[in-house]
Length: 158
Image (cartoon, rainbow, N blue to C red; front, side):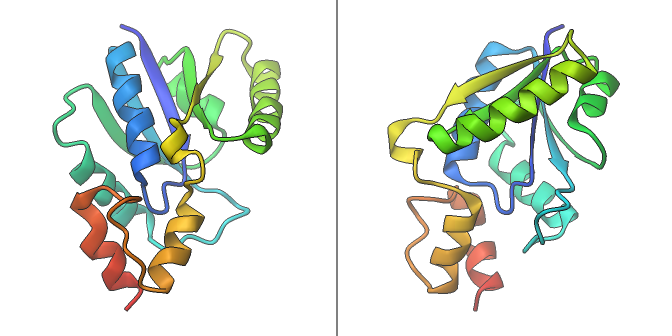
């Protein structure tokens, strides 16, 4: 079975994230979405809420699982016997950061590959930070969030 890990903070999950998940689910037998603690970010939504929101958005995908983990991404990959880490790339700045992370991961486990999936053009601007800024100012979120979680995100910023 070919298993891939899609790590991130998903705070909240966006339609860009969901697109990467759906594309990955067509390629791999199993995709594990790993909500990881990022020590450089203060989350808006707690881990359980993020997991719940992601699960609402992927309920139709039988080969995708959501887990909450801490520690190194490479250790999560080993735990699930995954040989691929999936990373979304929106722009050159993402590539530079992700290349650094992928190279660090290679030094820890050279048998685990990083697959960069390029964001569709319509999602190239999109990040959870952009969504939170839009939500803060009560903008229309229908073009940036999965419909399943719009109300929850809007409620958070009332």
